[in-house]
Amino acid sequence: MKKLSARRRHPLAAVVVLLLALAATGGLYAAFAPADKAQADDTAQSLAIDEGKKLYAVGCSSCHGTGGQGSSDGPSLVGVGAAAVDFQVGTGRMPLQQQGAQAPKKKVIYNQAQIDQLAAYISSLGAGPSVPTEKQYNPDGADIAKGGELFRTNCAQCHNFTGEGGALTHGKFAPSLEGVSPKHIYEAMQTGPQNMPSFPDTTMPEKEKKDIIAYLDAVNGEKTQSPGGLKLGGLGPVSEGLFGWIFGLGSLIAVAVWVAARTAKAKKS
Image (cartoon, rainbow, N blue to C red; front, side, top):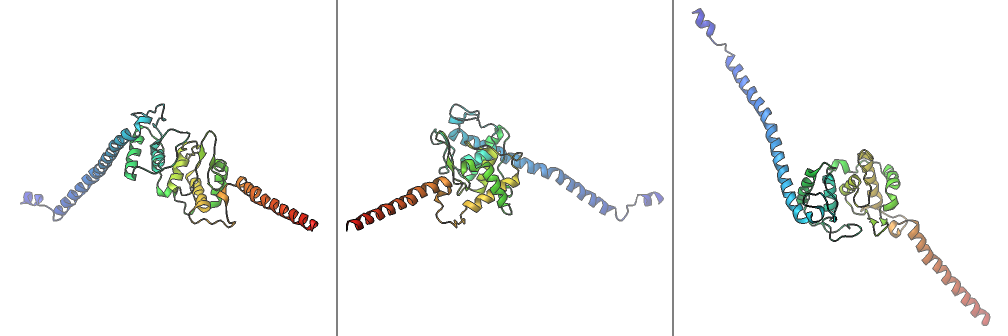
């Protein structure tokens, strides 16, 4: 009898076994679920790279080489990163319509999903700047005055002080920034397209980029007003001086000729 009573189970033994089973199940889920998710992400990324490679072979390889190594008609794309692809293709600059001093902005021929696939493939060739998130380029709460300082110091020499653009040498030009999305402005600062220098986060932190975007929206956005009236393209003293010379001085000369003619007529009479 003593032996049988010693083997008798405690009333809570079944509860303990059930809890251990649940814990084991939870542990297995915790161990395998993240791996499944990571595997799904890797599979999706691999598919994007494969699709991007197909698009690249058709639209880009003739200039940049079959493996992105570059050629006499186009630079290497190894290490340019997803941000460069999103900017160049997302603004229609690439694929290039024809060789020239500079690739102009034109109609976009790929949709965003295809652009993402191209970016995934180019990123697989070598690490580079990634496509920024909305949090990175959203100018809400940014310092507009500080952005104006930064823009006049680093950008106005080419884009002029309100971002209207300007001419450079040998047929090149700094494009107007009017109507350019904050994401593409951020990507341009990250990657330095065309003749523009790059401003990585080590040179210009994320906050300063947002300040510049906020300034451009203030002086060249859809809701921007010109309290002085006609802004003459916002090109500064060159256009204003030309306007004054042609119309201002021209009007004075016309008045002087009219007064002289009236005076001569009055003397004759």
